[in-house]
Image 1: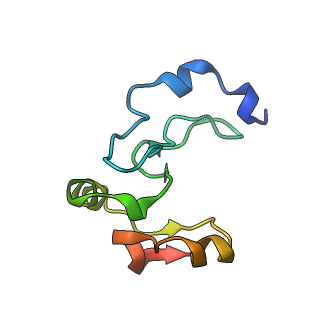
Image 2 (image 1 turned 180 degrees about the vertical axis):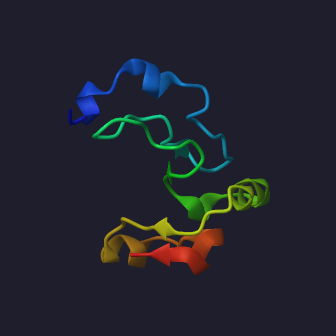
Image 3 (image 1 turned 45 degrees about the horizontal axis):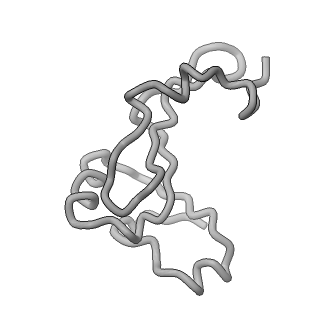
Length: 96
């Protein structure tokens, strides 16, 4: 069975483990728990999605560092990168 954004049950979205509060970042979430094709689910604390990591304050930088991220995939277009700030405290691990 293939999941689409519209078919994900509300309980997955409301799971209290999903949202990670970081000052300056509006939408840092754990993708864990979502079902995957073929059965099973994404393991918690292994895949995250976010906006605007360059806006993190020092406490947010420390919190992200505690997650031990290995790779950040920056999905901004080149013009968006040129207009905005860089990826912030995770710049050494960014893939475009």
